Length: 442
Image (cartoon, one colour):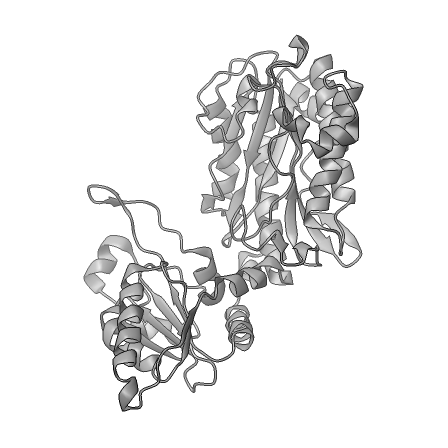
């Protein structure tokens, strides 16, 4: 599929802004972009636009401010860094004021240095302003000053600002349900990730270092157009797999190790998030296979529970119940399964949640629970399903044969009208498939 086809079109951003303004009656919305962050002398950290600002504007430069004013003849105004030909020599093209109007869909644009003078005019007569206090130090000061000034002029007939309301919850709800265009970008990120996993599976071998496997994993990401990872890759051999967010990736792989990789390419600002675990030697040991089968069965049952109307927490309960049953069958835990579940006594072996939302962020925004209880799944939502079992130092009661085993299997799942679709189904996870790939690579 052409990258031009996959790119988010201006009309999509325009539709999002319109829907946001329609859902927040009675006032303008003010949004802040991110800022460059110095790493050390003359070097900045890689810049990535905050996801919600990108979601509504498609503008990826720092130090910008967007103002949305429903009902205005200029409903979308951008403040941007001015075009600077000298600056462009050093860092490349910047849109400037002229580039913000037209290509980016803004109805009006101003250089950033006019923000202090122009923003109060754009917010004139508004009694409610939608702005996330604390999101930007400069905007916090301007809006606080405006509140104070309007209050002081109220006796002369000026309208006071009665409310400053955070638009973040409404933006999060919008982002929680993906459009077809968003799903296409997410699928492309996952397809790129699949190529990386294939390369990693064919590289891992006894004596190979975790960072060498990471290099093989991430090379296809860059080759296929992913500008960055969605998060730091976890490449964890042996007992390192029992460290949930292990990113050191420096150890050599042993002949009897399992290798757990949790990684995702980002494309068009959308990120994949996939985990696979396989035997470095090309053959699971009996204890490894026993644990793997328990986790895989748990994941299958949890994925089957993903459908419209199901509760977000229900997916975790299904996964945890299957894991507990497997632990009891293997003699690792004893007692009544329901009691173990109700007491969360399994958490020495399974200490994280089964799912999180996925989209522009790897742990995407949107609530898991609201005033009515757990959020119910709706078509267009995307979540991970990632049960695991970990026999690290915290699992003191586990039999010796399982010590140091860590298994997690994670897929990205789209809620559809009649159930769900596993977007990452093309990445092998059946134990026989994994053994065949690893053995072939040897």
